[in-house]
Length: 304
Image 1 (tube, rainbow, N blue to C red):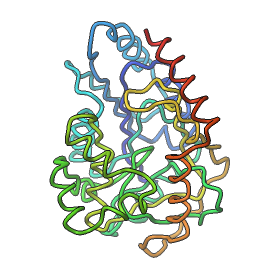
Image 2: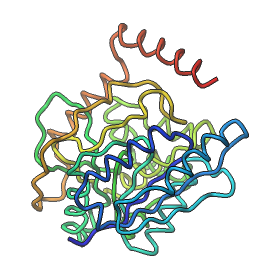
Image 3: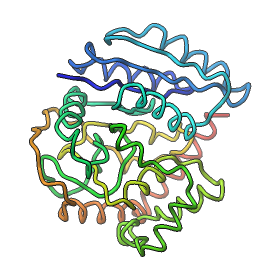
Image 4: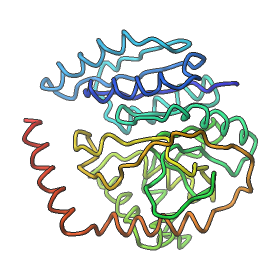
């Protein structure tokens, strides 16, 4: 199998980084895959010790075809680090698999990603491949497409990443001009447009909402699996952009995904399942909101 290089973005979470790497090592394709690690520099003196702990650890990693480590000399922040890192690697290799340091993968993650990247390499309407699936109630097709792009364990080709638009204002204006806001927000089930407005205002640095919007506007599609091959461990409140949200928790698939080519069009059943999940996520039960608030207070206290 022709494998894509894996990019791993790390910062200051040794426990999360170690878990992400150890899960990847359980994929049989790992030993034939290049691993390229971008280690961001500390944003302040408080983070320096933890960043150095991560850097010491990643120098001990084995189990891949090759390992390249890029240590940032200044703090890029997650958004800039990912945008520049993906661009650098994809310009060299033509395709990539992208992970952050809080994503735990199934042993079948790399098989799925590489199978899909090879199968759809010439399908211009397919912008990317994604490994995480929301824990919806409905049974999903073995593989399916949704319009746009996603950010929790994904892969793409240079032709796909070339669609990425860094300027949030350009994206927002296009969504409004083309009357796409409602559908972009999953029929008002999740405030992606507001997230984009916040990025423009400097309230967040989300590369992910810009990636989603870039693909959505051009009517491009991402492939998803029926069962999640990625677990987002950053829902414990330790991340820069993530709070405490165990509604995103999934059970990793213990079976491979059967890969066969399907028509490149949005799956309405899956889309409606996502709409239903987004509604639940944005308006969870009171008991859950209380637990989340208490957990957030605890995590913030531990960070001090």
